[in-house]
Length: 200
Image (cartoon, helix red, strand yellow):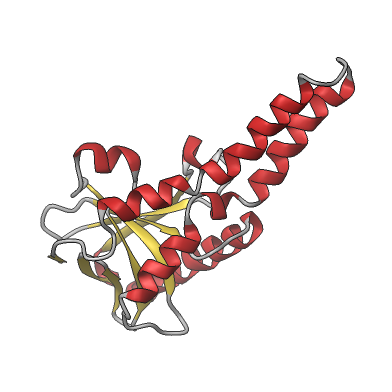
């Protein structure tokens, strides 16, 4: 594992990514304001619920995925057809303080695969994990940040990497919720296939 100073995934970029969430909060607040102007009835409950359902569909956009995609591509990392734009979080975390509170990713980058290893090329972290060093692959719900609807994170337990117990990946290329779930499922299947190939 190699760790350097962030070049694109800076504090300013984190605040821009977090600011995308305002675009989803605004319609919900507007719907709550709208129901105060109409007579109490079924619509006063339906309008906010429908607004929340519609904004949930665009949840990946609200989590800043368009900004993440642009940041990763601006680094001109080695890309392959078999790769994914992801966020990566180490356990224990390498980021701390306010940055770690606002953003749950330690780095953003590109996840690709070879016959022998998984390769993460990020803005400040480069990580190679041989398939044989992965002991477990499991989904982990993203929690309140993704309204418990966003595609699951993929947690990988590893051995033999100093100061790393586990690595968690989340896809960050989608704009719509169904696309996010589809990409996450494909990513988990690809990692499981690599892990299983090491056993055989």
